[in-house]
Image (cartoon, rainbow, N blue to C red; front, side, top):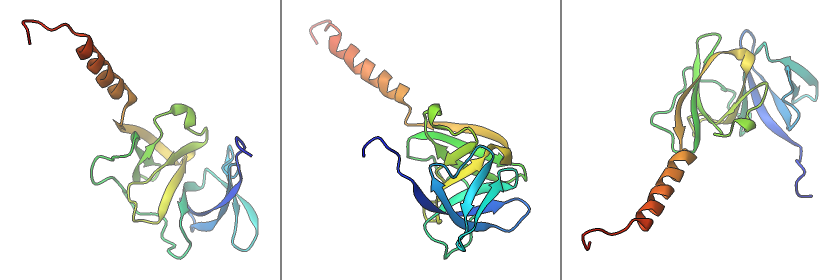
Length: 167
């Protein structure tokens, strides 16, 4: 039971460049394939949505609010959650800031799975195919493990330091 990944159907709204948005379910893991998204529509049809047509796959709480995309979304202040703070620039000039893990082994070959900046908006996570992007820029490293190691090392050095002049 432990160590096995379980499959789950997640609610998504798929923002597309030149077409109307789609809603449906993506099975994770497995629904985000190398060159297309495998989407189960609410009517029960399984379709392949090519990444070349896909702007973003928005993992949502529910389908009631069909707005899946706000233009030029950014953090109002420096994020507090650990990770890489990035800015994605889309082929159409739109931008999105988000957080990705600070472990590059967790990046997916087909795109980036980001935590979006607005927690009150309905998107919990957004998958952006690399084909949708013009550029990806790192804006900051939040909660760097390197900084913690330096602080820990400085504390040890202070403990091991000899007292001088009878302090």
